[in-house]
Amino acid sequence: MIRRRLRSFDERVNLTSRNAWQIRFALWGGALAVGVAATLFAIAADHANGLFTFGIGFSPWLAFILCPAGLMLVSWLTRHYFPGTQGSGIPQVLAALEARRHQGLRSKVLSMRIAFGKMLLTLLGLMSGASIGREGPTVHVGASIMFALGRRVHVPPHYLERALILGGGAAGIAAAFNTPIAGVVFAIEELSRSFEEKTNGIVLTAVILAGITAQAVLGNYNYFGTSIAAMERWHDWFAIPVCGVVGGLLGGLFSQILISGSERIAPLRLRYPMYVAAGCGLAIAAAGFASGNLSYGTGYGEAREIIASGQAITTGYPFYKFFATVASYLSGIPGGIFAPSLATGAGVGADLAPWFPQLSPQVLIMLGMVGYFVGVVQTPLTGFIIVMEMTNDHSLLLPLMATSFIAFGVSRLVCKKPIYVALARAFLAPPVAGTGATAEPVAEPTSEKS
Image (cartoon, rainbow, N blue to C red; front, top):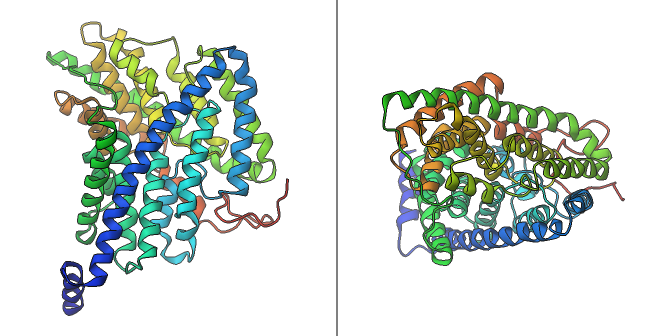
């Protein structure tokens, strides 16, 4: 056993080994490719949001045509040309990491075709007004690119295939948010749920190279700008349990709705995909119309405005965003929940701000953001680190950390299983009786022609 480990280590560090250099080039080239893809994806997502906003600028009623028609198109393309791209993409990465006993699954949910389809369909979803984000899809894209390159250079699967998937996913988060620390922590806390000696170097290298590439194009920016919010008096700390409990309850409720709703609606999506997509599109349009066109898209602009102004942008914004994001995800189209969850959390914090008139509204907004986000994804370390990095505000480290862990505990009371772990099981599930497909199909359809 010791000799095998030493021989494996020697192969990895040998500067003259052809196999070792193939592995290095796959890692370095893959990380750079993830950085480029994430950067282009971010720029294209902004334009896609802008196109939809331009369209409904003529009349808000156009959303009742654009949303259902767009979601029907994306749903059709997903099922017929890019199966395996649906949803956030993080469940597919988790399923691939656990796919040792499911031969062939990794190549079905991680490939260059999947990476291209994920970006294309997410952009089409944003053009259709769906309340989705690009960050979860970027994790899927990053893992797909690294996995595909590893296969091409014949990386030894017994120890590096899993590491490349982890590295690609972490690089995706780091490049998408410009949050390198959060990328590493996300890989440990959510994707691998451990820190393995043989993968840590690959994850760190992928995050560094992808992050440098993204910064070279977009600059060293902060995702939500810069915040200088601080808690100066001891009684300000009463806001922490309030934001933690409220954010955890709402976030846990959101996750439970998505988990239960996905299980219940999966058979309907298999039989009537166009009707489900159209219905969800109408629900998105209704939420957008009621909110004054504020609940469409990623929510990035709305969250940034809330943080900058320190006040709610409209009454009930977080609930409109909550509803629109649920409808978008249940439609089955590709798209993530990271950015919409952060926007919803910012709205929750802004609505709680009047309860603490002596405290800076930005503090409540930041606490509400991390409380709701952690309530949704149930990753407390990633939650407070990603919000801290996105706003470049280290003065709230302890309050963000405390809110994060309170929200995590409260969310687990509402939603017993982490959302991504629960949704990943659909990709590992046996075929649904009588359909020949899994609850969320990942292989090419064999009988449906519509």
